Amino acid sequence: MRRLRLSIVITWALLLTVLTASAQNRANFPWWNSPIAEDLGLTAAQKQKIHQIVRAYRDRLFDARNAHQKAQAELDDMLNDPDVNFDTIKPVVDKVATTQANASRLFLEMSVQIRGVLTLDQWRVLVRRWDEMQKKRPSETQTPP
Image (cartoon, rainbow, N blue to C red; front, top):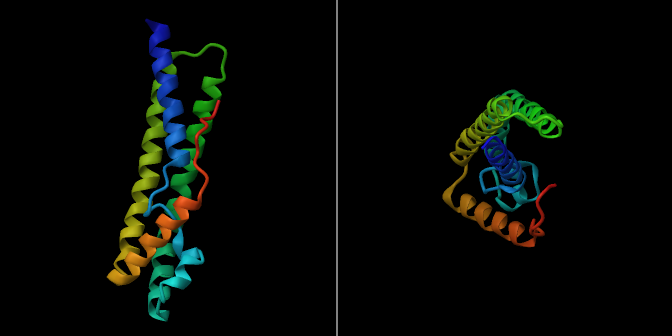
């Protein structure tokens, strides 16, 4: 029974790792620092407002990303320990999930604010370009060991 629980925890941990590594969506992409931004025809005022929004979120995003990386590293260390204990790992798995959710929430909040700066036509161009980039991106078929 203990082995089964441990297998479930490890499976979930690996699944979370794969999902966080490969689950990029339209909102979770720093397009404002990419060539895509040039295609949108942003005005100087729009560029300035976008940079203000990004600066306002920057430190919180760094902190959230670092918290997630620390939690993930702690989980990786525990999974590589010869004596894996479900009761010890479960809170760390929860911490990894919570920190990932927090990082995603912050990025999505910022993205929604930035979306408010764009016109509907600019938004549609952005979505179309992002979809094109995703089609060119090699598919991730292998999972980490």
